[in-house]
Structures are given as structure tokens and as C-alpha cells.
Image 1 (cartoon, rainbow, N blue to C red):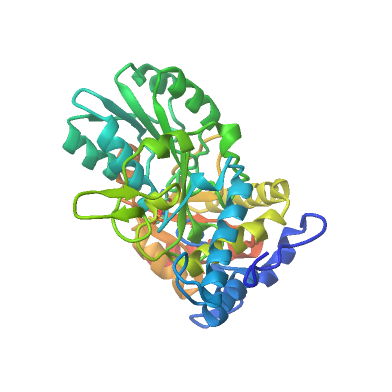
Image 2 (cartoon, rainbow, N blue to C red):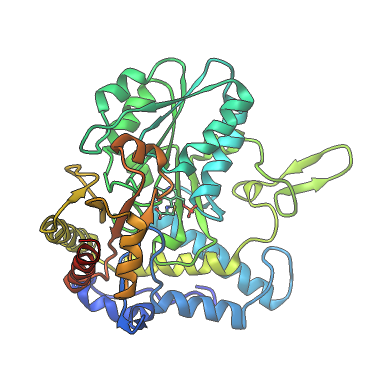
Length: 418
Ligand code: C6P
């Protein structure tokens, strides 16, 4: 282990999820004179102490550029950076570290694939199949490459519950479908897609599959080989690491034949004015000085998550979601947007005719943080005929008390707008 690697949790997996609250200093503060109830985890989750410690240690004692220096600090930084890559690889069960590309986050991961693979694979008449529940990050990069190549973006419909219409998805898969880009968990609805089934169908049709895993990683253990996906994109800041770091998992055979996404230092072996030779994987896709501290922190976050029993997390978050749904539906005019049978910790809702932004502002005065708006999923809003929703989203550290505080805040909003 490198000098700067955080100590992984040892012993039996943590099953007492409530006890983990103490690990998150950000939760223990007053906001607007009230204790914070942080329910905006789908936007960004708080960092636990081991992640914060790893960041501080990296910046304080091991700060240097990676892969470039022969001096001690550079070699420590490189060890920490590469050590984190190996732990992330193991965490998602990728076959090799060459398949783990550091990026700024899910958005950059998807842009990388859309631009590099899409740009070389797609041609006029080809199709990219997405779903109506995608985040803009899994729509717009494909639109850009479709414009460039003459390919077409095809959205598979979702049902009234906010589930993917799998029959329609299958009908839309044709010999023209070259790429399927699908979210694992919807940020606006909470729907968990039947991923393995969709991947098998897409592969049977000869398509390459990219999964947007931004909202799945904090809620479940993801095994990219068990899923058999070709690409899996995720962000550190939704899984207890900081912003500015994420990962693109890619099947080595595909990454190998894809052209670089960005040019610069690190992604080359040799450069002359006639031609340059690309570096090996994954460095071919990591141009420029990377976010070393972010990578180290993400390594610490997967160590942290690796020490937790995910069955307990799922049960805890499921119980919270059920409780929050019940409390919400006690309120006049409450409507939940997204009632899929399989949901992760997202509760999107409207309350009568009160605008979502007003709800967000009123509960914020009570110390409750939720997100309001279209959640970068405008097609979802259009599908359900609402301009915006309020969204409470749960992490493993949330409690029933947080939900009660939200319900009380929403009652206040109802009184104000009565
Ligand atoms: N969703 C939310 O509040 P970045 O910004 O690259 O880390 O992640 C983008 C992204 C991609 N896919 C899904 C499913 C997402 O939920 C997000 C980010 C945040 O819902 C911010 S819009």
C-alpha cells in the first residue's frame, strides 16, 4: 500500500447503518439556525472522515504531479493515484486497471464515449437508442455526435409509473441500432432499470451498451462483468467522494480501438510534427495533469463503501423511501412522480399548485436541503406534464427524523400557500 492510501475498514461489514452518521461531519451543523437535514444526495452526497482525511493527506504531504517525476513526492502521488485505480477496479470487478479511465465525472465519461466511439462507429442511418428517463448527460452528447455523423437518436418510452417500456425498447432495437445508452437508476424518478435484461437484448441486436451509473453507485454494489456492459460511467461526488472526479469503465477491446478523446501530455508515447503515437490504456484517455487528490479520495470512498453491508444499505434506504412516500401522501395535493416497482432512494413530487422552487425555499428555511427543478431531465418533466418537481434523495446516513423534518417543512409551505 502506498504511503498516502487510506486504511480500509477492517472486520465484519457494517450493518448498523444509523451508526455511520457520525462519520459525516457535514451533517452535524446548523443551517438557518436549525440542525441540517440533508436530502439532496442525488445531486451530491457528503464525504465521510476517511475520504476527507485521504484528501488532506494527499494535498498536505504527497502533492506532486503523477507519472512524471523521479522524486519521492511524485512517486508517492503516483502510487496513491494508481493504488486508487486498482481499488476502484476491484470494487466494480473490472478485469483490469486498463479498463478504468479517470474522468471529471459521469458527464465527461459519456462525452468521451459519444465523441470517440460514436464518432468512429456511427454513420448516416445508424441509431443510438436511449430512454425517455435519461439525464441530459446521456442525451446531449449523443445528439452532438448524431449531428456530426448523420445518425439518429431514438428514445424508448416510459410508462405512467416511470418504468421503461421494455417491449417498446425491444421493438426499437434494430439492425440500425449501433449504441444503446441507458441509465441504471433515474435521477428524476428513482427507477431502477432491469439492466442485465436490457444489456442482453442490446447485445443480441449487435449494439454496444453504455450505462449511466451515476445514481446507482451510491445505492448498490455494481459488478460490471456480471452486468456484461461495455461501458459504465459514474461520478465520485454522488458516492461520498468529492466533485471533479469520476470513472469511465470500458471493455478493453473497445477502448483499445477507440481514438483518443483529448490530446495533450500523458496520452502519448511519442510526439513529432509528423505524427504522434498514443499511450497505452488507460492513459490514452487521460490527457493532461489529472485530479490526483480526487482519484485518491474516490479510492478512499470505495474502501469506505467496501466495508459496508449493501444489503443493509438497500433495506435502510428502501424503508426510508417507503416512510417518506407515506408521510408525503398525507399532505393535501401531494403527487409522487415516479412510482416504479423497483426504486432507489429518490422521491420526486409536486404539492398542489405550489411551485417546486417555493417548496425548496421554504423547507430550506427549516434546515432541510432538497433539490427542485427539472433535475437535468427535461424529457421526464414533459412526459409527466410538470414543469419541475421537488426531490428528496436519500443516502445511507439519512434517518426517519430527516423525513419528519421534510414533512413538517412541507406542511409549513401548505399553510403559507393556503
Ligand atoms: N445528476 C442530480 O441532481 P455529473 O454532473 O457529471 O457528476 O453527473 C451527471 C449525471 C448523469 N447521470 C445521472 C443519472 C445523473 O443523475 C447526473 C447528475 C445530478 O440529479 C445533477 S443534475
